[in-house]
Image (tube, helix red, strand yellow):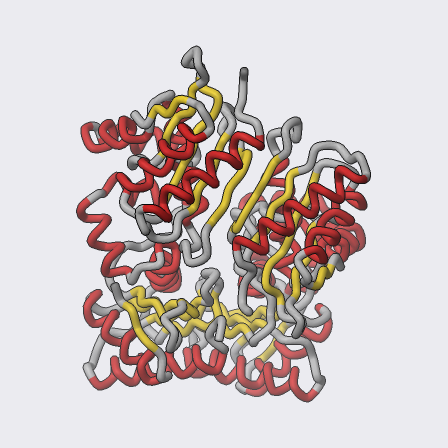
Length: 143
Length: 143
Length: 143
Length: 143
């Protein structure tokens, strides 16, 4: 298995929304990227604001960029803001360094994609990403 | 009615894929944008190449940009390449001027979003967009 | 097999240079990208001019962007210059639509990377890419 | 001597990888730039994440940009973040201000290129760059 399929991506998104509903979260945007950082699927719930697609994608892309869940990217950004500024520059401004960008690994540990969620608190966003990935019988690595 | 809902966007995408399957088309990428040009939903089928999200979005964004289906944007680009060059510039390189970007109108004719499809011929891409929009009981305006 | 390894990429580059030497070509730049468009390896021969890295990468990226060898991307650009202009825009100016960007496929036909070469004529560039890929026992798809 | 040759660049990369193997480091990406900041050679080891080419290049480019090893660029960024912000802007977002970008000097002290490495800790990245440069009988200037 090299990349998530569209079917798996849709399963992840549905399960993430179901988890959010159970927790009565604010409207979310969920994106699933392939290992190269290209979108497989995205859904923005009614009422989720207009930059949410870019934010969700920036969390997931940041995770893939460094091979680390975005919770770790966030910690690096706090510790070394100058490194994050450099990263942001060389990525063309594509990284959002806060929790909610979660790597998807297959049973051997290989990265097969990433999920990014935004709309509620970063911790809740991340919890929904993990719930979605696990519902697809895959391994979540939030950082 | 001011904008497509996520439910409507998902209906459009599913119906577009169903139409493509009936015609045995190549793998497609389908995006649905709100009237402000922001993504509501996107799905890229397995095997659809890595720039397809940007291409589908560029068709739909071009349609919204001018308030014209991308078939008309395409005609303008052929007739007046200097206009397209200017448009491309002022949009930050966000317009793909070929058929397959279709406006979605409500029963009063107001624009409530746009659908962009890429992966097969531009004509087939557009036909799937129209089929998807009509399956959601909305009005398609391909240009 | 999901992506070319670094070892395979290095084999491709060495074999491409060997082919070029046999044909007494001008100094070349050769790049190998993974299926997501990210660089695995690049070598620029002494005397190859300063934008050659970007040109080689633009050929290979264009092939991956559309899932077509860059000879076909080139044909599309000639036939429909407005489409290429749109593509160039949505890719952030990353596509060079001339022969010399060759897809690498595994034995099942899946895309596992792309090779881009520039420095001599486009036809010679492409011939070296194909020679390199075949020396690594992989399938070349120039378009 | 005005610039590193491709042969020297390849020697540097091989020696850097050998040093990393001896220290059992994480997968690395190594780039060698000419004095104008243009790539001569790059190799990304299997498992090195997708933005590593840009990060390695950003370290080496930052060193050339100021004529200082990136350890000194890093110190400046920490002391005067507003200066780094300006630098990032005027460079078009091409600078990553952390150790691991090392200038290559000839026997007279002239800058003939730069090496950038990323993948392990910044200190280990830099040590591999220095080892690579010294293996090519050249002088390393990490900052």
